[in-house]
Amino acid sequence: MTSSYTSRFEALRPKLIAFSLLQVQDREHAEDLVQDTLIAALENIDKYEGSAQFDTWVYGILRHKLIDYIRRTKRERERFVSDDHEIDIDSLFDNREHWDADSKPEQWKSPEDLHLRSDFWEVFDLCMLHLPNNTARVFALRELMDLETEEICECLDISEQNCWTILHRARLKLRGCIEKGWFLKGSPA
Amino acid sequence: MKSCKKASFLMSKQLDAPLSLTEKLSLSVHIAMCKNCSRCNQQLKQIQNTCRQRHKKEIEDTKPNR
Image 1 (cartoon, helix red, strand yellow):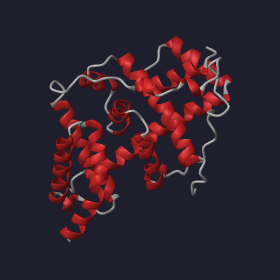
Image 2 (cartoon, rainbow over the protein chains, first blue to last red):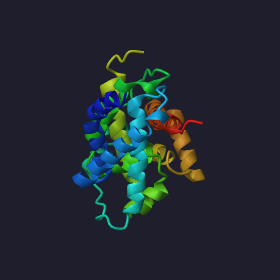
Image 3 (cartoon, each protein chain N blue to C red):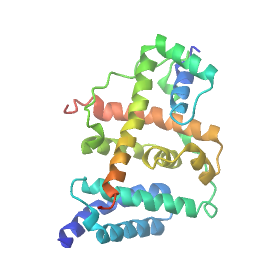
Image 4 (cartoon, each protein chain N blue to C red):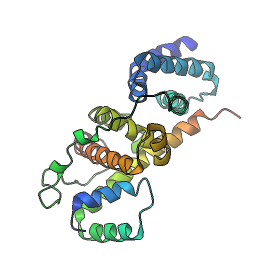
């Protein structure tokens, strides 16, 4: 039984490392955390009831390990450098700061079980890759790891105002990307 | 507030922190008049909710067996 899980882990490993690298710049550390995750998952395989999506379950374990790591190392890490200015949100608006015709939000048709749709998360992950690194990091801490902005600011040593600006740009950029990549692509209802 | 760009900042900020009364008012007045921003507001909320739902599921899935 364990061997079939081992092959599923191996298939998942590159994605887990990419997710880990968002928060942990050092590749070796990022890979170590993924390794720990796989070991923890194997050790707890009897707790995996099979009802859950296997990938989601393993991601959950990695998420806990990453949060733990971020809290533990917040003093030792190098200074956080904002890179959200690389996202051009001005071009989404015209000179009166109204939505530009090409970027205005379209109507979304979304299925009820959107959060269970792996095809949606594939597009979502790709869109995340288009964000500048440190911006993606803040967004992931907030929305994928569910930390409050206060804690994010403390961990990264940035102001709340700075955090809100970064999240604003990240969200507008992601919104447009997900819309083009999924909602307007005739996604199966 | 006439600017959709400024309105979008408040839409995002309200997902992270409570808005002041003035911010709340100017955002809701803008959204009531602007179809694009009203959509954008719903969609940003939806993105956050979808991420949250995924979490909740992860947490439920990682609960140990009784």
